[in-house]
Length: 400
Ligand SMILES: [Zn+2]
Image (cartoon, rainbow, N blue to C red; front, side, top):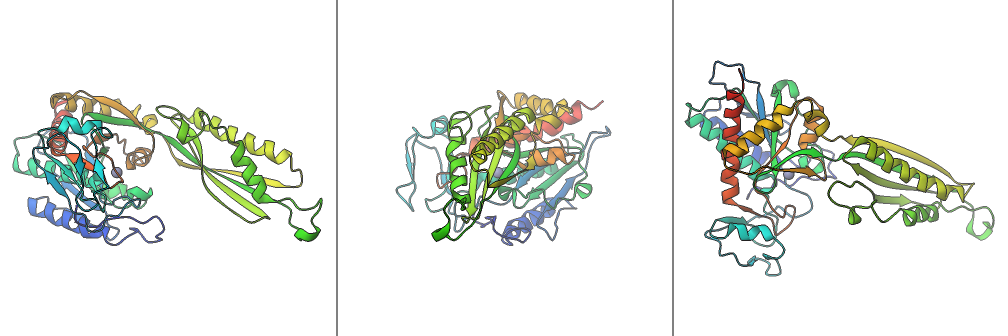
């Protein structure tokens, strides 16, 4: 947690920050020290490693993946993790900034950790459990499998990626080198949750061309693109169309950036839904709103551009139902009730699923991510390790 691995969305480099490699290098070294003989970090900051099969069966090669970077939203410099042993079930005031209080009202899940150990940051930074919890759990699994050779499994690949938080975790991934058929990201939250569905996502961009004239002599000539942009934004439906008014399975349209001059203005949107039809409907509705506004300004022109961002991983996972099924079996074997969830966002897994590695997301325990109040229960972390150790055995057992 103490190694600063924050990624930077403004950077043009890959990885976006060199410091991410500080952690990746150590992970590769630790894997080598464990006896994972091919572990290495490449020049882009990806760590690849494999644990050889110890069974005669031809078990599909599966991969466990986590990201080393932490979110740009909150500082990751000088993180001071605090281990609270035997947590008393009360509110926790963080020592370095006493306005930061983890209250049991805000985080109902805290109560379930009474008497257990939890880890928090100290008040000035995030903790970085997203996704160093996943990293730690995969490392612990590797160590367990290496030291317990009687546990049967196929070939297991380990992958640590940079820059997930800025949407580029898979940008320079070498799928050939990885050589896995199916994968699991460890990047989820509460104990027992299993995420096999994400949003489908597009970006939409509206460019408005006004008509420019000297403002002193502009009567009946000038058409101000900024004012048209404002009108479009004001006419967006509020209910069932915005992130601030939707939850669960509802998608939305969300303006994220406006830029412009009187002559020309650009509005950028993100469009989200769980289905392709829903995504299309949202995009069409946005276009209709914009066209209606433009009709009132016949001298202005508009361009409407849609760019694909990512697609719901479920489309791919439905073709390989065993990937999520085996995970469910491993959860149950570990004594957990499976809580299937949909992610109102994307993960490395959604991109991995579409570049050939069907990849649901497993829980790690992380809570209140991207914030100074980020915390995690040690019990949940141990359970996550137990689950993935069971999961490799489920794959072996279910292979004829
Ligand atoms: Zn994450």
